[in-house]
Image 1: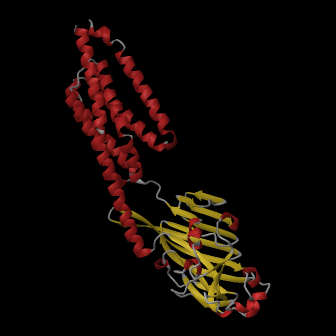
Image 2: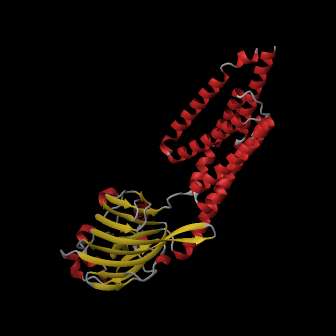
Length: 441
């Protein structure tokens, strides 16, 4: 009878521990919402600072847009004149750029900003009206427009210098045409003879710009070559195309891209019913590529990953204490398990608040030491044994150390968590395999 009562009590306590471990999901879920809120506030600060400096930048253009006079019949079969636009993309485009990143602070938040110098060199193909499907005499050669821009003009530190076919042009806001109507534009008077010429039209553009977090380029030409470097050791190459070559060291990175027109869904030239250039601007932006300047550690992302493992590690801790209780023939009251569970929840709030100030790794070390010390000073009054107190502290230390290793080994996190559960299950089996025999003594 006594054996039955003892086994029933341990079973009931084990059920309580399981329910408590699952119940801890509620406060940790609230902490997860807090992490999202703090991350959202960080994003707001980044947006505010970027709005006054320069947002994430796309380098757009150049595009040569030429108006053409055409005729069509109205409903009364009378000839009506209208103007269509031919938008011509470059044949070649070579971009050489260098970035100078810097970190700005607002309150406790960090924002990555940069200054950049870009040099664009390339050429437009010989302008052949027959290839466009129009007559040379219908082309308005003196009204052609070259459009160039960046996604956030506030980041321009100087008016970009443009040289087209050896002639220096002045880019003006509001004069853009084609797929980037909001870009800077410059009118160019092409000679009628250019329509039958065999010479490509070269261009040169020098840009000094500022932006935040990322810089991307569009595959504008039949062959687009980009080379970019910066003294930033943590780049993330993203977009539609990865670099062909890249070298990343502790002192910075150097990357090159080579993108062909075959890799995008935009022709080299097209006719548009108006000056807006149809939807090809969106297609070109969708094929952008470049680099994002990352911080080595994102405290909010790693804190959120820690919170996601909270139920697992709360159960591991409580089951570890249960194994110590059974093996050491001590008794821990369910209310005391609840107090320990509450202390485990405090860990995540402490980790979040400290990681904003001293970085994730240091915050994790401080938070885990504080919680281990807090619970270790609470345990002696319960188990009344230095040996069992040290064992409980060891369980806590092992759990937090394992969690930290799992956060570092993202690809193997699931495997490691499963191994930890197997190890803990084996320990519980070892400590409880004589349970019925001891209860019957």
